[in-house]
Length: 216
Image (cartoon, rainbow, N blue to C red; front, side):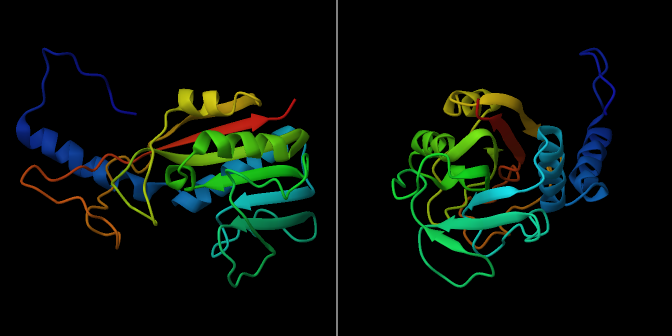
């Protein structure tokens, strides 16, 4: 944590630059993003008393979360808009409209780095809520502030309040920001990063946002 400063105690420019340089490297001192998210999911499941069941993860065909959902306990599958090779079962479908999947089919629904790319996230939230069994857990991790990255399209940014609203059919268990990577320098590193780096340095605020809901 950084000590609070009053308006009468501004940092000198050199000290302010040094502070920003330290903040830029701060993300390296903690767990990497996927490790943080996996640890959070494990904690959420433990608190909910869920140790086995049916899991649907949205958009994880190439990077299934099998280290969290071991095959010995979980029936884990992923949803993708197109078929493709994967080490786990793939449900081909659109999370904004998937009537082919029966109501209350899953105990856990996970979405990481997906909602910002979904054209109608309010419909996705409704479908996730519909697909959960009573007592089931929804875990959503997406973005509040990040550089533009169309994969294939970059539609949205979210706040905790927005995710609470979208998942109004669920009881909120937890929601908030993850600012671990706030000043991490990712400018120009993504193959689809189209935001120019100008004389002021370019946009570089990286805030994640998460929501955990439980179906009544």
